[in-house]
Length: 350
Ligand SMILES: *Cc1c(COP(=O)(O)O)cnc(C)c1O
Image (cartoon, rainbow, N blue to C red; front, side, top):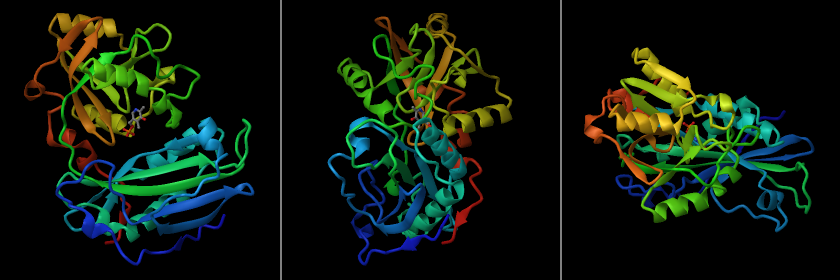
C-alpha cells in the first residue's frame, strides 16, 4: 500500500469568518479535507485538499442503494496548544467493523490515523481553544460505482472533514418510547454506523416532535419490550443507586465509545453497573415507586444528555430535576466525559 499523502493547501483560509465564541453545531467547516479513492482493489490517491464539493455521477450507487457509512469523533486543544484526538483508534476499528458489515473495503488503521494526523496538522488552527469547544471530525465512506444495479460496489470514496463546534450546554431531552417504528433488530445493521439507519428514524422523530418530544427511545424490534437506545445516543438509567444500561448482546445497539468510557469511569468509581436487558416495564415500575433516579444518553456529539421526561403509554414519566441527580452530575470528569478522559497519546504537533 502506498501511504504517501499529498497535501494541497488553500491560499486563503476561511477561519477569520468564524466567531469561535459562538459556533453552531455542524454549520462551519475547516479549510481542508482528506480524500482517498478505492479502485483496482486498493486505496489510491490519498490527499489532503481544499474543502469543497465532490462531483457525483447521477448513477452513483451510494445515492440509490445506501452503501454508505460514517464515524464521528472529536479533537481538542490542550492549554499548551497541543491537538489531541479522543481515542481515534477506536473509531478506526469501528469504521472497519461497519465497512465489513456493509460489504465495503476496510481502511487500514494506520492510514486512517495518518490521514487524520495530516489533516489535523494542516487545520490545527481550527481546533477551538474555548473551554469545552472542540473540532468534530467526520470520516465517511460511500459506494462510488457509476452503475444501476444492486451489488457490492467496486469503487468507493473515503473522506474526512471537520467542523468546529462550541461547548455543549446540555439541555435535558424528552424521549418518547417507540411503539410503532423499529430502529434495529438482530441480524440487521443497527449495531454499525450505516447511513441508512438514520434516514429510517426521521419519520418517527418527526411524529414525536409533533407530540412535544425531542427523540425516540427505541425498543427492541420484536416485542417493543426491551430498551435499545435514543437516536444517536446510548442510554443509561439509575435505579436505587445502580446504573443500568442495555447489553450489546442483542446485536442491534451501536457500540458507543462514549458509552464504553462512561462504563469505565463508573466502574473505576465503584458505582454499581449492570449491562443487561432492560425492559421498559421495569423502568416504568421503578418510576411509579419513585426509584428511578436518573436517565441519560451518551454520544460523541452531545457527550452526556440528561433525560427529563419519558413518554410511555400516554403516561409521562417526569424525572428528577437535573440538579438533584447524583450519578450523571457526580463529578467533573463525568460531566465533560469527552474532555476529561485520558485521550490517545497521539498529540498532533502544534
Ligand atoms: C454514534 C452513535 C452512538 C454514540 O457513539 P459514540 O461512539 O459514543 O459517539 C450511539 N448510538 C448510535 C445509533 C450512533 O450512531
